[in-house]
Image (cartoon, rainbow, N blue to C red; front, side, top):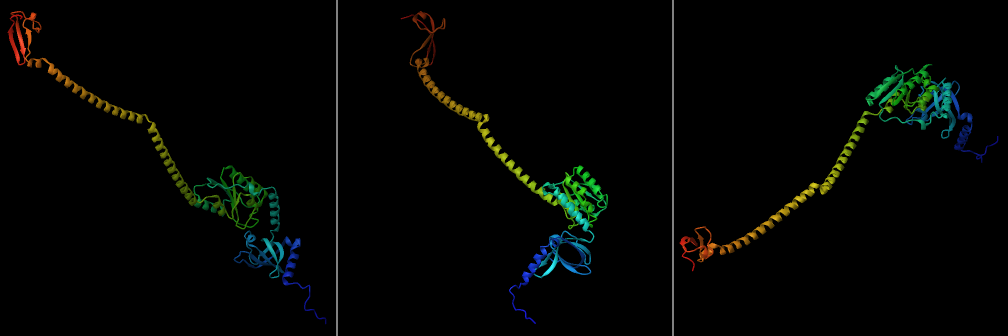
Length: 404
């Protein structure tokens, strides 16, 4: 028997052979886009929220992994449930484990619907119906919200409850429609157009959860085109968080549930109260600032007005008049005193020169009794004429004896 060599120059490590096997699997295009059907076994979902399970049939089994971002978009299957999984085949190098990396999972028998979903999605996306640039923002404070849903479903009750709690002053318009069945797409389109004509601020297109068949009306091409053509912003809340429909892609905003759609479309009244409080404070501060500035301007204008006011000038003139009056009065008093002094001096001089003083020095005044005239000449007092003589201390009667 031939003995094997202890060492060969072409020996590969485990890491190298696993990497080679992974590259080989990933280089096959068939294995990178594959659907596999089987029963779910050994399902687990750890804290990472990734999904680990095995697909098996009567003759074999394959390990499967679904990462968290894909797992949140599906309904988690039950143990033993027959499903169809889409994904790619690769190899987990660290464990040398060949497995399916799934990106979508659906109950068995739904493959045709999903294929149609992908075909229609690609078509409408090419036409630009899902372009984010054409989507509208929701109004912050809507006054009227239209709700398009079934009148008998729980979604209508959930939406009313949320709106009554968050924003009770909003007007709610109801456009009832069937949400599943053969005539559901046409009725949904009619209800959407009715809501658009009602001049609502936001339209909610909602329904509760269900299978892909139950939700298929929201994948109808006519419904999707109607949603895209709406003038009013549309919020969809169809099914559960993991359910996606083509109407969600065409809508302005997608909510995971009907209740979440109502929350997204309506402000919280507590937020509104805080908003009003903040703006009231800002308004108060602004009013105070304006009043303060107005008072300052008024004070400045008053000062300038007073400086040029006729009243101010009149007060100055009045004061100047008072000053002139006081100076004139003082001047007049001074002049009067001067004139009084002069008058008194003249009176004294005149008194010294008056008849009484002259009489006191021995002179006398003589009047003729005949005519009462003062005798100034001897011719006025001939001999025998009766005379009256006034001396310093009285009058005397006399008779003229003739001139000498």
